[in-house]
Image 1 (tube, rainbow, N blue to C red):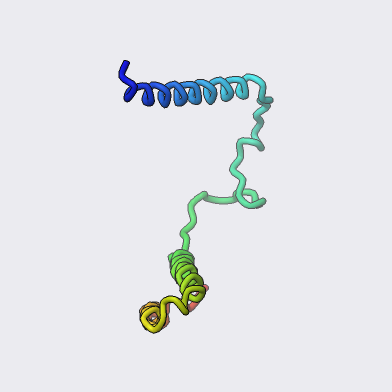
Image 2 (image 1 turned 135 degrees about the horizontal axis):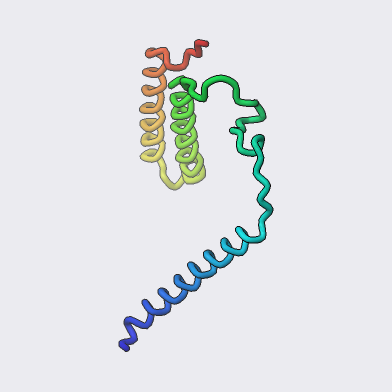
Length: 122
């Protein structure tokens, strides 16, 4: 066998052994685990509240919008901290670029405020 393919055989053997080990351990766990199902165990559990009524409820889109805004400004912080550490090396070009970056985010925030996205209505 060519030495080039020996690496692939080694990788295949390791993957095969890993797959065998996973199947073996899952099989042992399914044999040894206690299995005592009853009605309360099979009931849906959500945050300590017993389910009452229908299982469908509408989720407000505002939750996702607030989450998206949080992610956007969190990513902004990820960019600003390294910039602040390297500000002396970047000079005026880095300063102007960061002001431009913050300006674009500020425009997005003003747009969200004008569209009343940040108003929380019950």
